[in-house]
Length: 515
Image 1 (cartoon, helix red, strand yellow):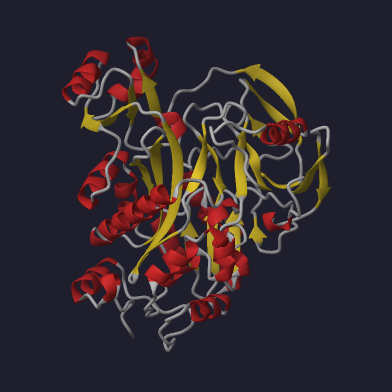
Image 2: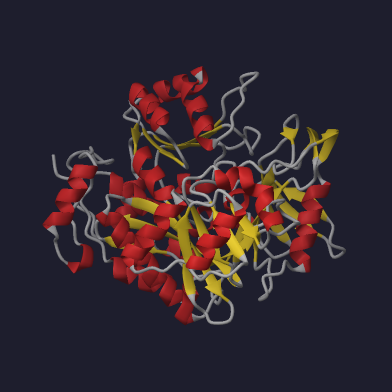
């Protein structure tokens, strides 16, 4: 059997890189069979993925992150805890609920699904040599997949967790020549110790502190006083090391990328919707994205592309392959670009980037991830793809907003809006218009696609996800303020939820798993 890759990074065959890749990733049987010819262009990639014969599964809480990828990959199915489509989507399988199941993380959800008798039966009956991809998984997931004969086409859980560490991100960035916001890595068991470390690093007194793991809205703390520190003391003081940063006035941006043996592919830089109180109760919490041609100046876009490619090359050197996401912080006054976070996996923005016009003209970024793990030799002109995808004509304006519960009442949902296309009336009111499985079916800026994540009978509490709203055009102005249109959409979707409220709850400052 052929080895997995002909390594042509930096324009030539690098046997050292090839040997490193073969050590880290076992040789795999190609998705189209052991005699599959090498791939050298997009047309061949599209054909191979569409004619895939092996059962492929995206196993997660919902289909959100890879929604629509089944149009590109043959034999693709979604195994989910949540059914946003109420049984209408032919490629979404949702097992019955097991009473009393308490699932506190994405990893626990995936492990629950893999142990569910109905899921095991579903995978067994489809036969073949199954492949799976997860948003997040752990060593237990790997063990369960091995028992079921499922091959995971992603870096190992151990490797993913290593690179998911925000402290490690700083070190990787430094090695790649990609700077983070001025910071120091130290312990901060008390406010006095925090101030002392910040003073030694010249960071001032208005600080931002991050712990190693967790969602940005729950484990990023803005601290300008001892009172601020005391609110989060139990979390910060328990860490052996935290990232202490100078607070800057910045815009948040994000970029998806994929490391292949031919190089690192990058998609256009997107804005991030961060900490909007209309959408999320978490200050600094991710709440959506915008993709549009002039999101940032060409200088900033080019700098972010270069930084992402350098990060990709460094990750490759350290044994990583496939899809990853980078968050950047862009200083308003100077245009300086800083590394924010590294997410070693598909991301919340992937649902937009995999279906942008450049993806339909060539191929979704995720197909390159599958290619990297497929066992098929490939020689790709990565530089040409990156240049083409960066052109303004390749980018169409779309936005997504993640709508969470923002009040302090827990209860049960009695009625929830269905997944589908909604329409906004001239007075700003919102109503259901028609059934749909794809957000591309919206026809104008008066319409939007809503993917429901919390339905009738589900519990609802502070910070719970209502759903995802995808719409044409922008949702923020140039000052990163939500537009009136965006606020009307949020208000309109919320008005369609009816809940039986029970008790007022205390806000939980405990970190929760990453998105």
